Figure 1 (cartoon, rainbow, N blue to C red):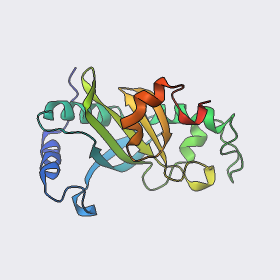
Figure 2: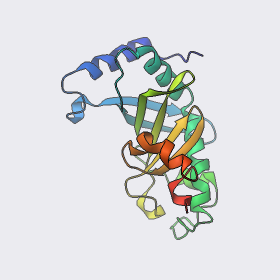
Figure 3: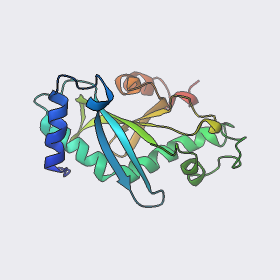
Figure 4: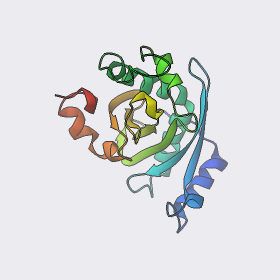
Length: 190
């Protein structure tokens, strides 16, 4: 399946990826503007990083970006659903000023007001069907007892296959070992 992505924006991304200063400073970071409606509407500007070689895989990259941007609302909701079992029953987020976390709506209110999705990682050498495996790094406010560096959610299309603390792309590298070693979440293992 093909997921549409704006061609002009994609060419800008490719130009940035090829720039000699890519990732070396803030001015040369690749950013995605993410907006979605639905039950939990939001807007976020995320830094995009590719975690494996992408040259020769431009169509895969375009397709993956099209999938992410076209489904970002559902992906965000999947992160909320994945977090809920850790927050409610495990007691995390039970002593907040807004009361205990019990629902996805409570977690949505706990988001960082700046950029709830801080980073998007794509691993072009790990393909699932028609797109690359990718992860989203989200951020909740500190008073919710969330990991200080956020949470990274690894996706196969709309399905969260593993998540844990925000290790800046590390879970995208290690998700297969982590996931097959137990559960789909490092906080629920053992």
